[in-house]
Length: 167
Image 1 (cartoon, one colour):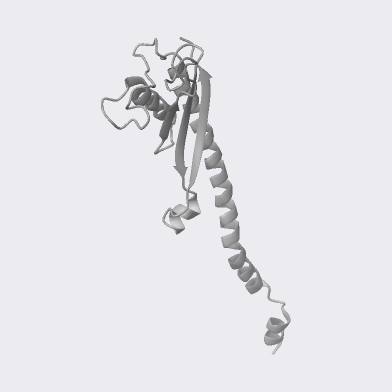
Image 2 (cartoon, helix red, strand yellow):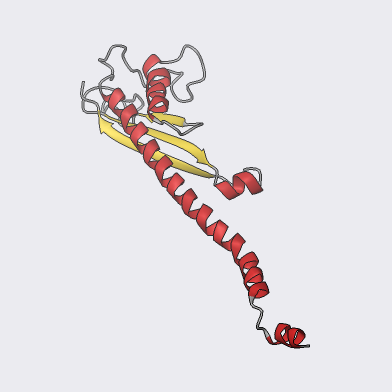
């Protein structure tokens, strides 16, 4: 009878601790994986920004006077799909960005020349003192989404850089 009275009055707290642990464990795991995911996302976004800077550095020394020369007015440049591709804008700059983006997969590179010639505003400028912009984007799938939802939720991370062509 003493045992039954002790169980009913709460002197045995082992069961209560077990239930509290079972209730709080999923919440704690979500918080921990959330912190890990925030760290991964910041690292990947910084890597994309670094890779975009590397691509922009490559581009500023390979303007219209570089070897090989960049031609932003080439018809293959807007989508970089139709051959023959511009060797600098469609091949070399994206390859430089992807090579610098260590650990980040499925990187999409966009190269734009925002400046045009004053005499003809339809022709983009790849000469000295013209700007070039390189953007690198990649999908990021958080761990809970990857393992619990099959990757249904993802975020697009972006890194970009804009510099002035030097030669």
